[in-house]
Image (cartoon, rainbow, N blue to C red; front, top):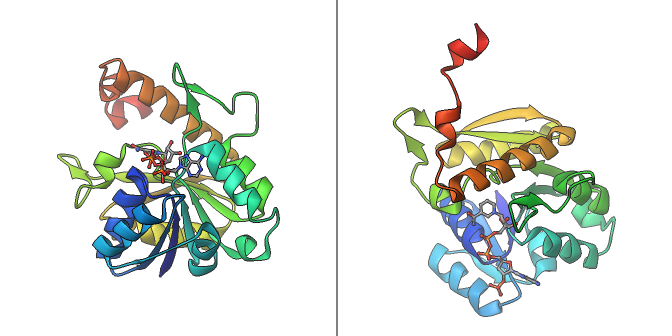
Length: 212
Ligand SMILES: NC(=O)c1ccc[n+]([C@@H]2O[C@H](COP(=O)([O-])OP(=O)(O)OC[C@H]3O[C@@H](n4cnc5c(N)ncnc54)[C@H](OP(=O)(O)O)[C@@H]3O)[C@@H](O)[C@H]2O)c1
């Protein structure tokens, strides 16, 4: 698959490196052409502009700060014809100081991106840090990680599910974009716990106990 990656930071590096290793063609784009070229050299991919990444990839990973992602896509032209055909993977977390959602009271980050661009947005990979996505595979004592996906387009969900499997993880479609805001809020909650030194896993009973 051809994947355009918007961003040259931690998430671009973590996921781009994994997908390049799985045989996908990657084009990295960022405001620093040098960083994009360095990632391209290391992974055997290509580098270009944001516009070229959107044209290149049938799937496009948004690995920018949330507000930057929205503005970057809007600058390409709201309702851009190419963008509307793309599977847009939204891994952004619109989380501000105090681990508060900056979308609070709004439609949620993924929904807002879909509304602004018309793209087939799938929320994915936002709930865990890049250090986990860099593991090959991201698996622990309980086995491979499940990766929650939210999206309204069945083909787009299938595309991202395949990319999840390429990491060695298990895709778990948990709903449409209306559920993405819950995933975003859950992630803000998790980040707050981790930063306070608490292990969220201690909050959860075994599945059987919760569903008895
Ligand atoms: N890191 C994680 O553990 C993690 C996990 C899940 C989700 N996320 C989400 O993934 C997204 C990317 O996170 P990250 O950790 O990869 O961030 P990062 O390492 O800071 O990289 C951010 C990227 O965005 C670019 N950027 C920043 N401000 C920009 C601007 N005003 N205009 C254009 N480009 C700009 C940076 O360019 P420069 O290199 O030139 O600064 C860099 O390429 C965020 O939305 C974050 O919430 C992160």
